[in-house]
Image 1 (tube, rainbow over the protein chains, first blue to last red):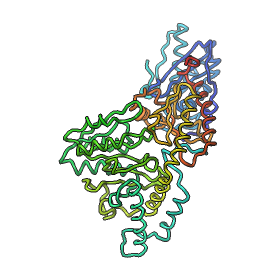
Image 2 (image 1 turned 45 degrees about the horizontal axis):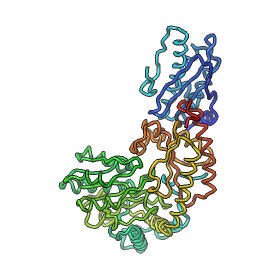
Image 3 (image 1 turned 30 degrees about the vertical axis):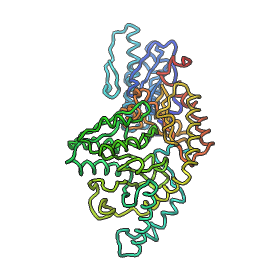
Length: 140
Length: 390
């Protein structure tokens, strides 16, 4: 059902954990629906110098979190905001249709963390949600 | 591979396969072609199988009808009774934790104008006979309550419910797919009017099951066509499958007490060890009144599919009632039916045994499970700050 890439990222997830002095934290999803992603970032000079995640969810949720953090690590905020769920899915060599919402959640988690950074740093920017909120259970 | 998903399906026994083989090649005749010797031999063997199976549930051969499996038997029992008795009433009673073969059939009938009462169960998944009694009205034509639950293993007070139905003059159907061959069944003593079973749950072949229909029960046909099964169920008989089913059930019922004792020991060993070794864990289902082969747990703060995948990578086959494995956004209706909140129901795991499982396999499983649960918890944002608080 899952690609080898998904299984690899599920069994050896990259960037799992917390960042104690994170200046950007975003949480999306909810326990009721069975998936929550929490992303921690350390942003310096608009660059994501470190990123970690914690995820409650299925194999695809863990793998998309892992891949999404890989894809934005070391990138600028603007580059990270360009990350689409499609790119995450492609990088994982695809996901079963029923699991596509997990990739949306990963994209949303990155955006939520960056929004948190904006809010904490007094930057008056609002990131528009590009995802399908019915899928990601993201409440604004 | 260590197979711990015997509630889903079981491995066929070699003896069952051997018993079936001649009916694919030598005795392949159509059991309904009464004028060919090949057909007659097949028919004889099939009728012996029918007698054998019937006797093992306290029924007579004429009351046992072969089907394609448990789902067909459930569909037939419920739709067949509903259609044939609609002049008497349009009310059906079942429970919230039935198999989908029963629930979806009842929902279908609701669309056709029938009324269905879904009686809730207690925290252990058990239905109260009193609740069934109170739900019966003068419009009730059928009560359908599962013998034992497929997810959490709880065994219902079937004889009591059967007694109530008899007293009230309402037909009583039980989906005994999980119970057949695992616990003693006597349709007479338990006042069961209709009973569904499926061969592949007790080391028989897939694609064959049976519906017991008590003599005199008014029921419409489901599959129309030829005159097979005394004119009640068309389709050329699955002779080899039927022979395999009889062989498998005979073996399952042989030394049942002894086998049950062994299974219960293994089951309780798993339950005790898991609850002792892994914190924030609950047992689903009744502690004693449960199938000898069923264990079902919820591990808090983690999700069932990732647990299942992790175990699968190590060669352990189990199942889960999480949303991600059910193909919907909701976790299992059974776990919600016993009152679990969604977030706990998502973290479920079922390990179900068979007589093929060994103590070594169970020990390997019990060794593998705790670190997997811990790894997933360490990855879970819900677990943050929880550790060490219990």
